[in-house]
Length: 65
Image (cartoon, rainbow, N blue to C red; front, side, top):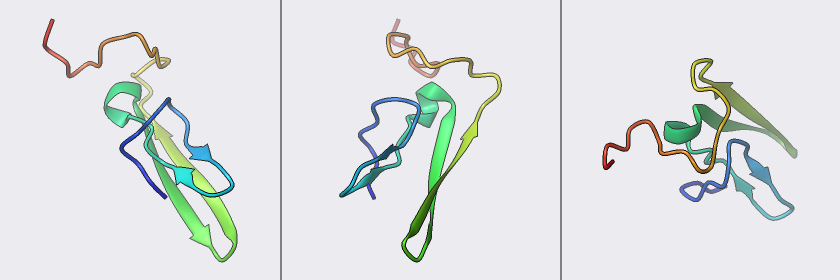
């Protein structure tokens, strides 16, 4: 499991790791994982006011412009 290196608004499940960070501050999507023995489930909550994620948009909390 790891975070702090998000690439989009969905978690990445690979054979050797799970990337849970979905950049909630910019995408409006918060992710978590549920482990039950060998089974893994990704849980997500999406802000209904966030709209679709745009990788070229400035995050809402960025006030540098």
